[in-house]
Image 1 (cartoon, rainbow, N blue to C red):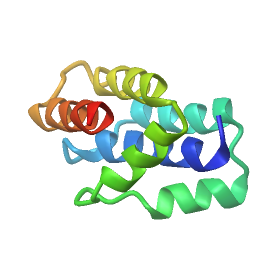
Image 2: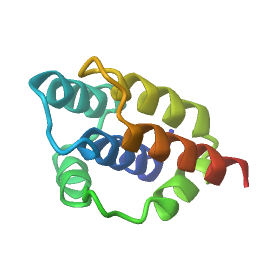
Image 3: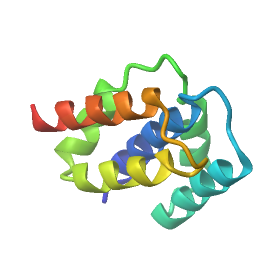
Image 4: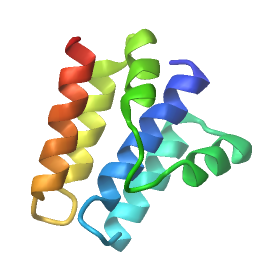
Length: 105
């Protein structure tokens, strides 16, 4: 997985984690463990965290992940992140469905 795709994947997961309006300790730990697992350095982490906005246009990040062939990893990470607080919000489900549609197009 290329660094650009890793960063895009993490930004998308970060947006998903914020869709319900709050970030739990468990979600925070998951997010930073994901960046650890993907081997993002400090500069990449800063870029990722600064790029996370609740109103983000996710299409460009999904396109980056799709072009790298990492769509399955993205959906897996998003699904894993969506259940961390014990309840899958409608906004999380909508974002995952939007990512699926963009990956399929």
